[in-house]
Length: 254
Image (cartoon, rainbow, N blue to C red; front, side, top):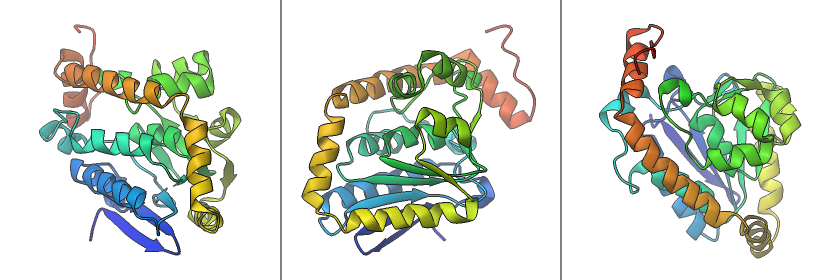
């Protein structure tokens, strides 16, 4: 069975992360599938909105470390960067339903969604520094904008997790619901949007996003360059080796 389930009905495309045994950790193949699906949805007038959802126990544990180490993105045309640009530039409403852990990309992708519904078990974290890396998905720009600098510093410099109530307080999520209801709520909102005139939806989103689109794409490109460089440095090597060895990393020499 596919790691990404794609379903289209009544003007709504739903992308379901379907690798629960691996906590929905993203592989490069999954990024590619999502990037292609977003491109298709953007160009198909029959699709009016897209929903991203996971399982009621987990949204995503972030990157699959083993896959990431063997297939690290090397160019801006890599699947992960195509996916990130596809999120940022997606012209139609984008909705997410998040339950359980949302780590790394599992959190940063949400800053590009128009509506986010969280289960009360949702736990968000962006532990890039803890892996010897820097933020991605333009989160170095978008997290301080939404959360304020000091809360962003806790999330990005300390890598400290925050729960659904904190995400609601800063505006990252629209509503908190029981985990068993999150996907259904997102689908209900998607159907409401799908019944509205597409041109009005697209133009309204364009007008809301246009002021920072160039900044977002610039931040993504700069983060991508830094991320690729830092992947080759001692801190990241120590972090990933420690992860695979199931031990605490030692950054005292890096």
